[in-house]
Image (cartoon, rainbow, N blue to C red; front, top):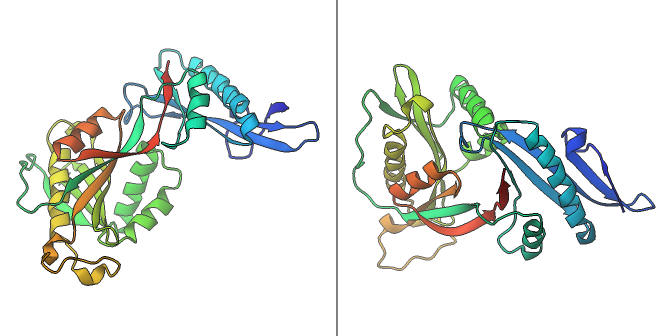
Amino acid sequence: MIIRNVTTSGQRLENEFEAVDALENRLGWSRAEPVMNELLMPERPLEIRISAGGAEAARQQLLAAAMARAMVVAHGHPGVKARIYAECAPDDDALMEHLESLGFQDDDAVVRMRRQVVGGPITRHLPEGCVLIGDRLEDPRERAFFLEREEKLFRRPDARAWLDEATAKRGFCRLLLTTRGGLAGEVICWMEPETRTGVVGQAYTAPDWRRKGVASYLMEAARQYFDRCRLPAAYVPKMRFAKDRPPADNLLESIVDVRRRMTAAMRLAASAGYRSDETLVKLPGMDL
């Protein structure tokens, strides 16, 4: 088996590998994908994700090649704290074993957090100087500003397609706090009527407004929005409701997906009443 550099995904040549046999049959691939994001991950701003695919017999060596390249990338940023990590399904024991053999620890994950939707007024104080507004990002200028933040902060390469899909969902809404100086924070919400669930798809607070109650107020506004949007049973034909259950109970809960290493986001979700329910994807890694 030969492992060599190749470019197929837009990565730098040095960051991507393929394995071939003596007859040039492709056995697998691997990549090291560095991202610098000091705003979302201030404690470890350089993150390098490694991934591999193909035949099981080649996977471990391909992961090792990507790991070695990730170490080189990290050492090329002196003074910057880095983390090398991989994505692993919760039940993929074989991949986890390979990653642990490289020195990775199972110390990060994306978890789904849930809470019951209850009525009542917003229990947080509106931050001074802020005004709460709701829209559907239909204004072209607002949509362009949102996409610019999405690409810069969340490093979403398919930001436009993601937003098109989100805005097409039932009950899509952006709740934002604005000031005379501009945006203080925003949350993106929508509904999943088949599962009777409200979704907080994303939350953001402008740097100058952090630790001032903006995110907490917006999470409460989202809870109140979900309560106002409770769906009558006619909108959920696949579900059967008990005869004595009032229509107001049709929207049972709301969810938010949070990465464990984003401690501020975890604290925010917990303070808003959300509790960890399931692990969606493990993110084992190694801090450098």
